[in-house]
Amino acid sequence: MKNLLCAAAVVGGLMTALPAAAQFAKAEDAIKYRKSAFNVMAVHFGRIGAMVQGKVPFDPKVAAADADIALITARLPYTAFGEGTDKGETRAKPEVWTENDKFKAAALKMQEEMGKLNAAAKSGNLDTIKAAFGPVGQACKQCHDNFRKDH
Ligand code: ASC
Image (tube, rainbow, N blue to C red; front, side):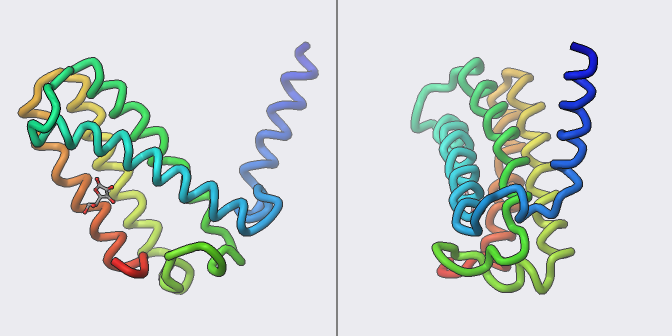
């Protein structure tokens, strides 16, 4: 059992050391993966948004659950922007790769703001959630403006 766990840890270590693109068999798999992650994130962020905007009644438990999913999914897409994933069914601009440091910083900013929204959601207080919601949307928009086509 111990050996098995060690082997799993080694394989896990290798996985993170591999180039991101190598974690996907095909570029289109990576593209599908990152789009799916953004889509699930947008669904759960959007559900919090509906509460923030008073379109649906505020339910603190639901908001906290949505914020957890939004935070986890916020961490997912960025391993799927590897080399060779710039063509096909994607709206990613070339700048994702040519200005990759800026792209990574924009991703990190979104993740940080999503982390703050998650903490706010745990407070169970709608005003606290409202205050943390806007900066996440701003971070989304910032990245779309600079790194996504057709926006
Ligand atoms: C959302 C969503 C986005 C962002 C963006 C913010 O709820 O789906 O893509 O917010 O519209 O400007």
